[in-house]
Length: 318
Image 1 (cartoon, one colour):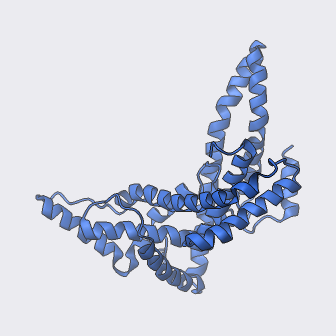
Image 2: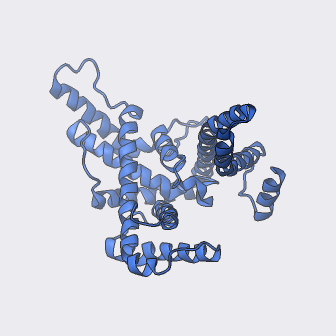
């Protein structure tokens, strides 16, 4: 990335986020040739047009010369994104599913066999997807706390590429995004079932895609059910509120030290205050975002905001 001029680096970060959005909500398993010539290039072109319409002066002649390498970069980042989900899930899965041997397992063989059996039990009948039963004693599908924790950590981080910046992730966690996480969890549990311990393996994209397609059918069945469908949607809406609340807290965590330093320097009337004042001009938009989201959640909105509603909320924070 250091090779690219600053504005192009910003554009490519936006493009990576857009590509991750596409992977999470549309097509997780793109092929190199079709992706580079198709979706990757399309996203870059759309952003180039947007930047130009917004008056941003991208270096002339840079895109035609480097468009292929840019598209390849997006494809590589897409694969990294999936690997990062697995890396994070690999830390959460053994804890959430208690993949440890009981004290009664004395030998190494007994310990491994016990863990294998635990993993196999979760995989059988897709029990690894189920959370606690509801008040009527009925199953809660795609509701295991491991899935929730992974989704929140991946999709609602404070990264510049965080997918919670997109409307698709601001009402409820998209079904396909949840299925992608579930397929990766299935892959990790399968490794435990086979070996009894985690292995630092690359994702087997063929097997992962097979799991994804099977789980997608199951998701469709649940979503269309008159009882379980609305319950699933309500749960995913709750996840978003949790995720966005954490996102806001992380913003405040970043903002607070800058504000405190600025107030301290302002009182001392030092030149440092002027420097921090410049930093605050970058921070104020984050404060504004925080206020907007706090107002949104305070109103407990169930439906997505309309453009008019958003404008009113934004105007009222100034």
